[in-house]
Amino acid sequence: MEKGMYKMDNIENIGTRRELLVDEYFIHSTTAKLVLHQPTKQEICFRFDAPYEGTQTGYQVIIHDGEKYRLYYTAKDSTSPDGKKYFRDRPRYVCCIESTDGTNWVRPSLGIIEYENSKDNNIVFDKTEYDNTTKLDNFIPFIDTNPSCPADQKYKAFEGGWGRLSVYKSSDGYHWTPMFDKPLSIEGTFDSSNLAFWDPYRQKYWAYVRSFHNPDTDLTLSDVKNTVSNGIRDISWCESGDFINWSAPQMLDFGNSPDIPLYSSSITQYYRAPHMFIGFPMRYIEREWSSSYDQMSDPIHRKNRMKHDPRYGLALTDCVFMSSRDGKSWRRTEEAYLRPGIANEYNWIYGDGDISIGMCETESSVKGEPKEISVYSCEKYWKDSIELRRYTIRPDGFMSLYADGKGHETSTKTFVFEGNSLTLNVSTTIIGGMKIEFQDISGNTIEGYSLSDCDEIIGDRLDYTVSWKGSKDISVLAGRPVRMRFYMKDVNLYSFKFEK
Image (cartoon, rainbow, N blue to C red):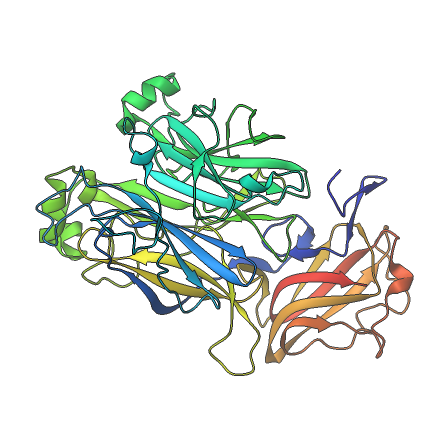
């Protein structure tokens, strides 16, 4: 049974965990609607212009270790500024930049890997030191929070290439060595971001890896590997108790959502509600050439790239938002979370929308406002030094339950909670507002906690404490099955949490 959860006559006890309004899980009925909130574009916070970096630098991963954030990425130069040359044989390295605030990033001189007769650089991994026979495609590290993890394996990383997934370990996140003498026995293609992490709630490791499938034929995975144009890129999950033996990969279950190509996942457990999984999968599409491409960025450069491979010009990417409560079944938006944006000379390309794995908590640029969440995405693929763009999100602000000015009602499913007060992450307008009623298991209003008893909820706070006739104490309701009824007018409700 998951931490903080148990069943009472098939009624879930949510304890004091934070519940996000990113799905229909707690909604019994509503006339309001769930809406997606795109992140806010901020500054360019780093430029990857070292001589070993270039036009295919990416796969950014955020790790919070103590008082410092680290951003890992793979560094590679692939095309000349005019797109006429493709540097297929240039090496790919793994590098690290650091920050104490998630806004200002520096390139440390680590003295680990030699590049052009100098170790004055931020390179942490060169695969050729261990293996010259296979190429590095991606390297996704994480901190292993499993209490039984040995000290020399505090950092682990999936290192992937076509049809091969290896594991490296490190005690400090800088010096890496192979963890096993051969790749993992997991089936997949692995030619994109492959990630793993320890789940303290479910006491197991999760892995989310790249694969292909074909919905129209009986092609096997081996067939699809050899005929990539026939396959649909997908994300598969598997699990392990020891990071050695893994279950067979299974595709993420999106229910009745369309079967579309997903390039990478950027999945993480959300730190404010760690029972929840969220992800920013990159969508991938290739169209036939048409005059529409001439309306996008730099058609001359696009056509030069296509001489190396048609998809270098035809492929386009963006990303969507998805969430899960079990790591297997996912709710995915069909609306873009991060679009390529208004056309400029660098966007509408294969590479847009690659959001970082992980996030930072950063100070707001507006004095007096609470901290925000920052995520990062790379720009200027194919033709210039890659730049790292920061985007900000209201805490819990990926989606919300939204009621317009007409006024709407929502009833939740029955649940049990612990604690003595109810807080909301909520935003109203000056003429809008919200009220909450508690009902018993049969739907009858509980005396003292009706809509008319509820003091109107007005304002914009991450931690608005609800009161009824001036009292915030709801301890009398703790431990018994209840449901909530919301009346909302011109309101966004992002999350709720019962507090002790």
